[in-house]
Amino acid sequence: MMPALANLEPERLWKHFDKLAAIPRASTKEAAAREYVRSVAAKLGLESAQDHVGNLLIRKPARPGREGAPMTLLQGHLDMVCEKNEGTLHDFAADPIKVIRDGDWLKGDGTTLGADNGVGVAAALAVMESTDISHGPLEFAFTIDEETGLTGASEFPAGLLKSRYFLNLDTEEIGTLCIGCAGGVNTTARRKVKLVPAGVGSAWRIKVSGLRGGHSGVDIHQGRGNALRIMGGVLQELLDRLPVELAEVNGGSAHNAIPREAVALVVLAPSRESELKSLVAAAEAGYKADLGGFDSGLQITAEKAERPRMVLDATDAKNTAALLGSVPHGILAMSPDVPGLVQTSTNLATVKTKGDMVEIVTSQRSAIVSSKQAAARMVATICRLAGFDVEHGGSYPGWKPEPNSELVRKLQDAHKKLFGKPAQLIAMHAGLECGVIGEKYPGMQMISFGPTIVDPHSPNERVQISTVESFWNYLKLALENL
Image (cartoon, rainbow, N blue to C red; front, side, top):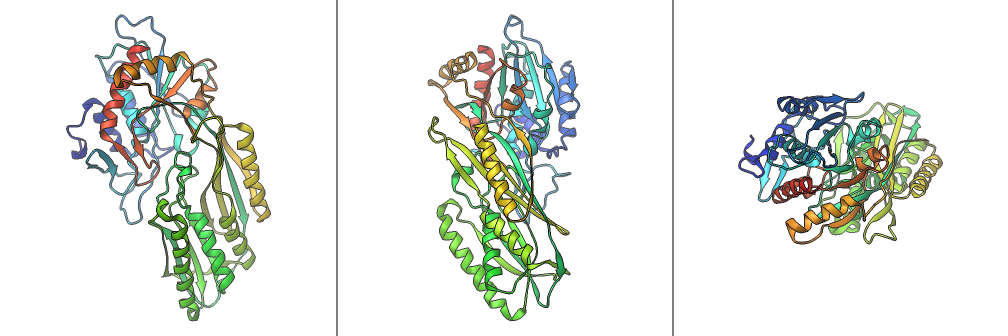
């Protein structure tokens, strides 16, 4: 076991987290992690079944005396978001995650940690091999590709599960029970651009960096900077004030992450170098003042770069910059029913220049289907006005809260017994697999809970060690109450 995890409790959970941290498991590349889970089941004499996309289902009999209890599903996803800081030498396809302990917290060394959802998967495996938990009959589902498209949940077969209760182990605040979540859809805009030979001048690499980023659902209300929106504004200013030529612009990492960094390559006559630097410095000062304490680490820099052969023609350059600078990002509506809950939002997620094609990906979320559709339509309209073609995809359903269900009552009883008070019932402005899988199993009662995880989907991701033990003790008691 790696040093950062030594002597942590519960030992059986951290043992599995240690194994998972050593296994590369980017979205769509979870085969090795799946085989590890399968090997744990095999050693216990439990059969596993794999569906057509790679989800894994395992069943465990009830402990003696609990055979008549309703069957319960424990579910988590095998993949993790693979983000790293610039300058961090890490190959997510081959290298283990290096875990660092910082007081009561664990984090990665310049990378995402994979506590989302590695802790949940590790907890399920610890339950699987337990002999001291008085649980009823159990099902375990380990899904693939949750982070980039909820693919595993979307493709999960109907009619396969037998459980009455569904425990999703993928939320990130101890002391809460999640009983609902938003649905979502991706809106992708593409424009085939005209390329022309670069003019006489030097190449400059304009970079936006230092932002916190985060989960586009969980953190959308935090007021954090969006590197793509900022880059769009910077490019608009440069294109309006200087004879700048735009060769490419790239930024963001995933549809469900607030973009932390963006880079643009521009060409400008050497005689205008001081003006370029002045405008970039002014832009940095302006955006830093705007963001304030929400995202104080922002940096906008300009450095000499290798000169490109081709650049976008002036019209395509201005339209691309204008779209990045104006497409909506952030909260569109708050819930009228749940105080503090974001109801509808949109995330400007990624931009990529590849040859003569510029692609911009956004995602919209809402607990209300019609609001989700309206947000996607609004973003699509703005993109089309900028001359981009648009398509929608990756739509997934939300999950309607049922605060008075039998499952909620039983888990609240367990929470009061263990912690002396009921848990806070919440709904998430994020896509959870409960909504997607549960839609195929009408009548199944669902709930989601987990330890405290901060800044998931970014290299700042960290999990609070003490809450993992609390989460584990609660999970054990919950299973004994069901």
